[in-house]
Length: 476
Image (tube, rainbow, N blue to C red):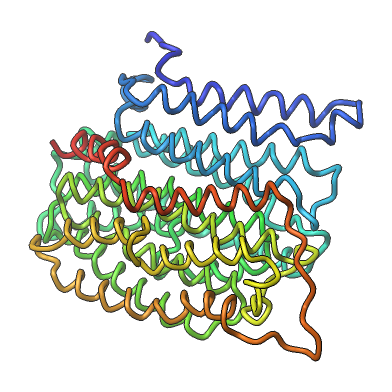
């Protein structure tokens, strides 16, 4: 077996970043050990490495690890999300300085696991990569200056994650028993009908439970709002975005195994419809912004299912494109939460009152992110939803598209309530709240994120073409 380093340059760079952080973490020089301000810029270099590796193709480890258009697209998305996540986490009011290097070390481990997951085309490899990306998050979620809610969030994430992992492993055993292979290339030609091979369908459904847990899809969504609320704002921003990329890439690969109308595909559609409905209805009642975004992520998981059930290359491309758009929209929204929260506390809707006067740039960034999450033009959210809706229409799931359109209308209320509180709601109290001290760099980067959302909505072609290559690779 020959190994070609050029096939996994993004992973090699991430490993190098990890080694530097590990050496820094165990260093006896306190000034060196506690300075992790360089990590976002290292992550920015990683974006360049992933970009120049987009068209590299090949297989390794006896076909269990595939470097193709799909994997490279998602590795680029992970690199972008990792950069924004680390940039957002450089100044955390609730994180002790001596833990900063270890914190970034765990984030880097999680991102590396997601990159492994993007290229895994064998079920056992997928399982191991999923665990690598998860273990780091188990460690950082409780880190919030001895906050009891953070400890509770960490316990819930670990326990529910362990249950989901066990169910996935159990399903893997069923698949091996029924299909006698764990390679996706061989499973693609296998029988996945309920009538002739029920054990395989049950096994695949159980294996997907782990992916649904990461995606916060119903009925594996119950951890989501509690973990977002309990974790620090910066940690919640990461947990709410990047792990979903790993889940989507696995679901995209697995969705290529089945056809519209089959039992497994119908499970995707039903769970997606229920997920977006429950997520939106629950979000209507929330007053904590992070809990609202938690239920929002449950609904967006349902939207992604639209592309997966379509059974076409355009459908898979739309799901891949929307996953990138989603992390950009959500990270932008969390950016405002993190930069405007006093002492790292959670933000309620009433805390946004008068934000347009106290921090006008951040209010504008929040408005752009909220409009994108709703799906209003000319934002990337509108373009992403349009691609999803059109990819699923006339492929046997028109009812699913109608449910998604109705839910998009429901979400207008709670997303635009963020804008209403920021721009029109009167501030409570006898005196006007003071100006929020937001650094110039925070305003600049927030504006860059908002501009990216608008640009990706108005000129989606180049990025969607990359996603289309991924879809065509799986379903030519």
